[in-house]
Length: 88
Image (cartoon, rainbow, N blue to C red; front, top):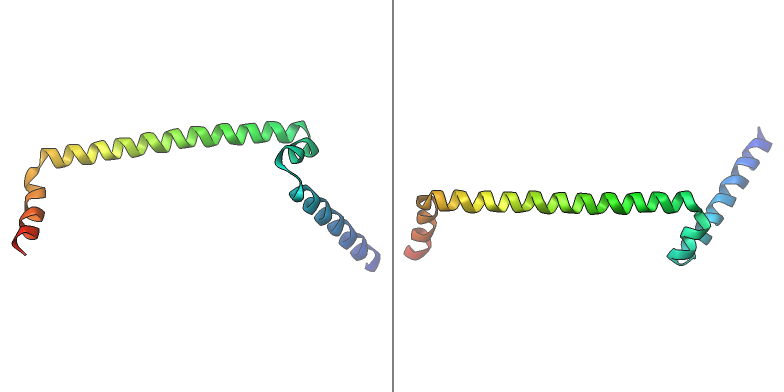
């Protein structure tokens, strides 16, 4: 049991040291050290981030357009706010 525990601790320490070395490297060296599968994974993540950013932008644009249309369709909704600020 004790031997396994020391072996596990040693393995964890080796992994931690390797991760620290990797973290200290410039990004291009990190990619090279991780190998081609990490590069493919990074490209997938970047592509997904772009897709998500486009979709979020599209959704925000739709929401803003809907708010503008609602405001234009019911000018009475904006009138009390104007009247309240003008009366004070």
